[in-house]
Length: 172
Picture 1 (tube, rainbow, N blue to C red):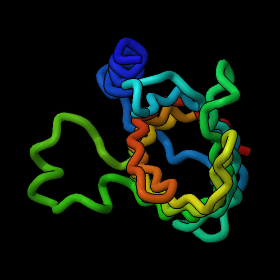
Picture 2: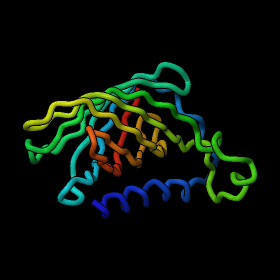
Picture 3: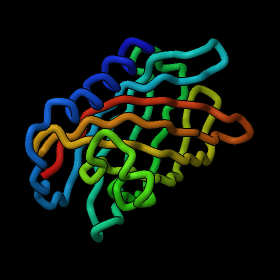
C-alpha cells in the first residue's frame, strides 16, 4: 500500500515539473466517477480495500454524491455505503499570497476537497449508522481525468478508522 501511495504522489508532483506553459483552465465538470485504492486501518493493521463512487456538482464549490468502501477479498469485513457532501476549492484560493509566492509550483489547478459523509456500515452482526470526514488533494491530468490522494476518517459507532487513499477520478 505504501508503494502505491508513494508512486501516486510521485505522479502527482511530477506533473508540475514538466509544465512549460501555464495550463489552461479545465472545462466545467458536472458529473464524476471515481475509484480509489484505500488503506484500511483495522484491528489487524493496514489492509488494502477499495472505494468507488460518483458525485454531481451543484454549484461552483459544492457537490453531492454517494460512495461504497469495501474489501472485495473478504466479505466478513465492514462495507460502508455513504452519502457525501463535498466542498472543493483551488489550493491557490486557500493559501495566503506570501506563501503562494514561495511555492515552486503553480497552485491554481490543484483542488482541495473537504468531505462530510453519513450512511450505513454493514458486516456479519453489524448494521448501524456510520459517519466520515475526509480531505483530498486533486491534480487534473487531462480534461476528464484527475489524480487524487487523500485521508478519510470513518466513525462506525465507537471505533475510529483511518483510511488514506489514492485514486483516479473521471469527470464529464
